[in-house]
Length: 312
Image 1 (cartoon, rainbow, N blue to C red):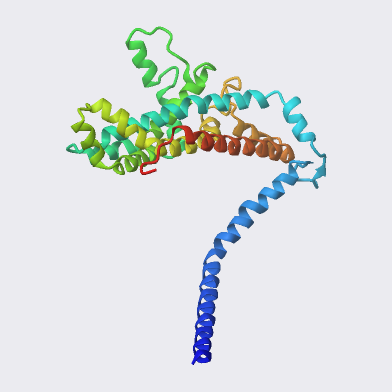
Image 2 (cartoon, rainbow, N blue to C red; image 1 turned 30 degrees about the vertical axis):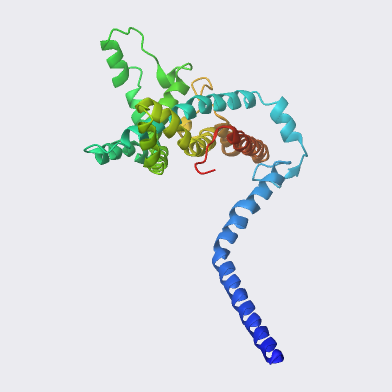
């Protein structure tokens, strides 16, 4: 009897093992398209660009290995490298906090169960659906120095010399930030904040109200602490997106006036596709990737000090 039981148990184990292997095989088969894309379109090109960053390469001729020369040139021989990096961080440092705070408070306002709130959500979300190039053309028309609606309104209010906006070095980046806020505050970030708000238990607000907390106190001690994971998520994505800003500056000013909007991504693009200096552009891109990854790791490390997860 014991021998028969052992045989049956062995068969059951072999059957279970066969089913498990078949299940794993199906899993890998379904993963194959993603794996091919990951290695073929991400890891492979990434390794190639890492090699090219150590070469002198203009596409027309074979890569010539130069070692760390591109990186030495980056730090010591490129007059636009550090200014473009500073401008990029200035754009992200101003635009991202304003965008996250604006999206959060707009989501708080639109989270109230008021009549027509769905219409308001739709209206605020619509600018984010406008294609980027169309947004730039629209804002260049609105902020035109001579016949733009904004400057005309300022003249009607008595302002003798309104800003030059995109044509003024001092106002070019604030103009791009304004355009980014118009298109971004009511967009994806607002939707994510709305999802975060609707995930806060209503019982916490009821308990705070019983304790005598007013509207501001409930928002300060309940809403904002429980929104910190969402704030963190939107901040990380916002910084990554803002640091990679390219299309808006390229279409609006092409880096001008006087290199005022010459951002780092535009600097990479110019070296790659205007000057055909692919090796140096690859070095710039790899340095930038290290910066973005480092900032993301730093944010995740610091998040332990201020991000609160309900239930922990």
